[in-house]
Image (cartoon, rainbow, N blue to C red):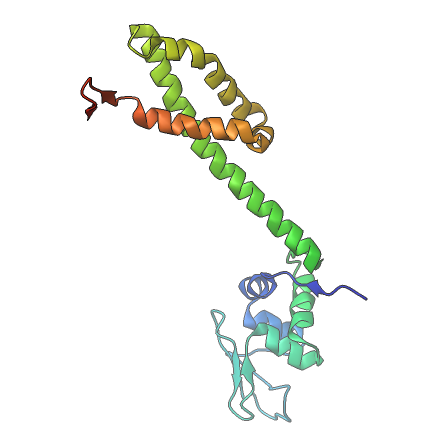
Amino acid sequence: MKESRSCDPELYSKVKDAVSMQQAVEYCGLHVLNGKCLCPFHHDTRPSMKIYPNGKGYYCFSCGAGGDQIKFVAGYFGIGNYEAAKQLATAFQIPIQEPVTYREKREADKRNRLKRELRDFMYYARKWLVVYRGLLCEAIRERSEHFYEALGNITYVEYLIDCLDQCPEQLYSDRKAVSEIGKVERRVSDWYIKIGEDGSISR
């Protein structure tokens, strides 16, 4: 069974942005004068088709034919809209994506989703790791109550930051490391919380 294929989702908009209505008409060999031309869709003896500027299409005041650049070329050559768009793209050297199978599209969507997830993770991880490193450095410098925590964690935090710079994909795939980074966020949030002897919490 032959696998069906999807087309470039931006093909129509690319063609309509790059090819004016007049260019499409002249591509079909018709002459436009004062914004009008002979209508090719009926036996026209005087120009009755209006060619509108700024991508507003065409309209024949005699037979009622109307549409955009792609529909005009499709009707003129007796082909489908997609084929007409591809024909115009080729004629005017408009770069388009080659058709892909739905399986390839799903795989591409999955890759794009993973890229977004990795980007979000890198932003999230870097933010909390850099903040935590700053707190640890301050604790070491001032020998505060967090001094020993800082001595024990600073090397690992700097290692995680280096991994973000050198091999973010591998870091993201390490579930343990991701879990530790989640703990860093909570630790930063609790950094200034103090529990009194009576169990009261203050910052």
